[in-house]
Length: 137
Image (tube, rainbow, N blue to C red; front, side, top):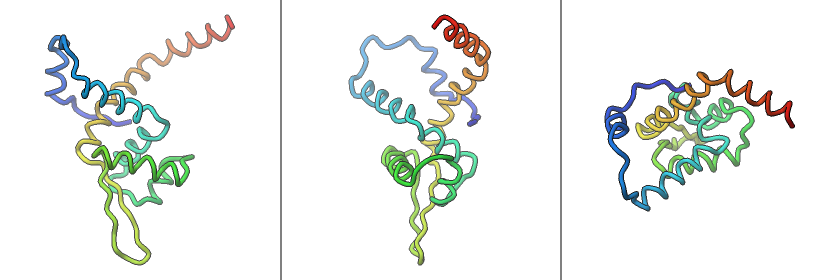
């Protein structure tokens, strides 16, 4: 799990009252990022790159168990497009490609670290609620 120090700018803004008007462009970006991060693979790739540093494509595929070549390629391309991952192509034969988290990617991982901590903290409660629900069904 990613562990990072809180970003002081974000923590300061968190203490401020919510704005009365929401910028539609920011709202659209938030929805887009949540949709991307909520997919099955983005957070696992963030985690693998955080733990492994710079990884070759094949190393990244091994680190993210169960991902297909097509899905890994699509996901890292989206992450590269959004500035979360830096891709380096080495002009050798055979060519190889390395992936590294950018500072922006590291900060996204740190932001979602809170979700991991929340899940860990409330694991027992969630499991009890699920068990109770299953018994009622």
